[in-house]
Image 1 (cartoon, rainbow, N blue to C red):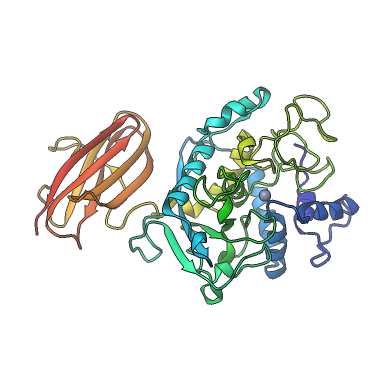
Image 2 (spheres, rainbow, N blue to C red; image 1 turned 180 degrees about the vertical axis):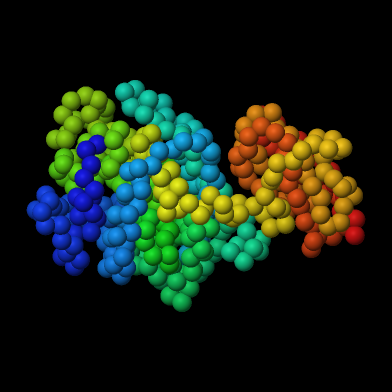
Length: 437
Ligand SMILES: [Zn+2]
């Protein structure tokens, strides 16, 4: 709760190798301890360690983080917009079983979208005193629908590598020349690498303000999603929820040091001395919060088991949205969630056409799919060929009430009957259209 930004920097970056100096404040032995705490062998999350190494390679990171922190402190969320982030999942595998299925990947996307909307079923397990602090972060995720070169993709790349396993010291997954995959433009996509890890690390992420080539998150395939190769107790997709939190600038809830002077720069999370594991009984008191309701061990930014964590707070949500308004703002206008061939949905004034229709029809090659929605909601538009194969999609576009159109350019498709489906909250309609060449 109490925050001291310079101490935060120390927790992240003071190391025997880097030795940033903060003479004059209370960094010192306590921060040295924090390094030990944050990097010990049994850490689940490698983010603190990874970002220390980023600083070694990229000295301007420190000034960037300070600047971002200033912006974050002054930020207030003033709108109710829900932003959908295009996610690309790069699967890097050595053995065939590490080449996880599309379904396992989709199970992770589903977890992220539930957790970030606070629609996860286990909100019932949030202790009652903390429930009012639970936040809908208003960030959602789609698998990318177009590549950086505007070609069709399902948002998943698959690369076989000779590297048997990765560690937190390794960035080679980020480079095609080293057996990995080059990152897609971090200003348009959130890059998620799924790899095979050695040791106890489950994942790590780069914080905002770092270099572009490694600005994503990396998750072990055994901890990604809820089916397939996942292994308990990290089998509910919460490693990615935690690492996405870091990518949007969240710190660990205990502030990566064992003392109480420094914490996570978030006002509504209780002070906490260190990380928690397993699944403690509520209430849990510690040296920094000695009275009930105690520490918030069910927070996604603690180290408890997947089935024990269930909350981002309002303060954490504000901090993530600050990242999305500042260093990550270019994602808001990314077209990565929009299929090639469909232009972004835009407002439309009804003219002579019927609602939930397309015009012209028959068409070649462009048609406008028009629809109206009675109240603000998510809209998904899918286009299918007559065999039922999905050929273009706009996922989870958040729109106010009104009438809209989406332009579809069917160049490259052959003449025939096509279907489009509009899905909104409580509404689904499918109609036919004819491409005539
Ligand atoms: Zn972490």
